Length: 567
Image (cartoon, rainbow, N blue to C red; front, side, top):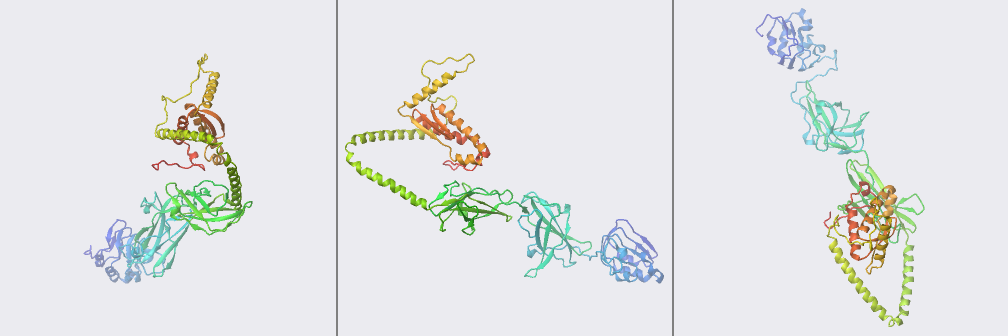
């Protein structure tokens, strides 16, 4: 084309042509009009094109159509001064390019760029990343900061940022191209080392973050090139936790059980299970002691907040236990613990125990009671010395009875040791039972046994129990039944129905007799110790192996039990 010396008009418009503009066009001295807009040319306009201006006559110097580079988005760098001075190319003619035109008359705000083929770089020596909290406590507000990026060739033009949701802490997708990035409105500051840092404060308008969700921040930094080139950096995934931990029950003992409401010593104890934290985790427990009057509602702290160390935690039970002493306790005041938990987002919640009444007068009263008992006993012992000879025969008889009872207890222990490792009786196995003496009752026409037979069986069983030489009594009582009933009366009634049914079933299986029952307590009698031992072992085992509802296991007073293998 350079040899087309007589060519006056060259139309290259809208042909999707690529590559740099050919400098050889400057040799086409007869060329008057050059249209190459709407293409994909890249780079700067060659200085050799100034030859076209020098060759035309003065009448053609005002021909503004001689050069039309518009809509070539990859054209960059300064326009040759010769084209600008002669009016052959103005800002209006470079729309859709990044050509730099020194002309403030037309569209002075147009973005211009230098020819730079490399994007900006993050300052690797400063960590080259976004700094943010690992857990944030708000659904609508958070902040982050990052060190300034650099580009020695074209400098930095702008920053854009966006937020993306992750699946979890370790699984985040690279979806930066699909995100809606927002222009950065951060303020900058200088560190003591002279580094420029940007800090962005964000407050949501409308769409908020999701509690328990994982997110990451993406940042794009654009340099001053034409077109601008970007570099992308991201933060570590962070968690949103906007709710404090759910408190647990605080007990005034080291065994997580309700103690008596009065104390005579000066040691204050507390025990609790982990507070429930569904999103993040509890990072710190603190406690302090309060006091209040026995009949008062307001309280005051008698100590400072103290952090709970790792030694207070028992992994097997999942509980914390602390104790405090050295306080000047006052008679008639109630002392209680307040425990505070802080989660990873910095949110706090607290719970308090019921408290114990400090009453040192109880100690003096107890001493008086002991003395009032000991003195009469000593006097009676002295008065009874003279009757020793007379009662010698009686003591020998008692001693024989004691040896016999000890022998029976040893036999019971041997039986229990054997039965403790034997399976419970199953259908088809023989269990000693008391049979009805005498003729069997005839069944009614419908095949049901009459009530007279059942009544006769119970009467004969009672007679056999209470005439037996080794009759054994068993008294059962459900632990913490009062606390369970107060916590959830309806659920306690369901527990009681299951408990009573198992007791009566096993009493029947082991030929026992129900003397009486009151609430959750039973008084039972068996004809011999071995049957009583079998009954106790079977009842405990069946209660332990019963598939209790999860609501039952979560009641106050219920706790996990472990065997000798810590299972």
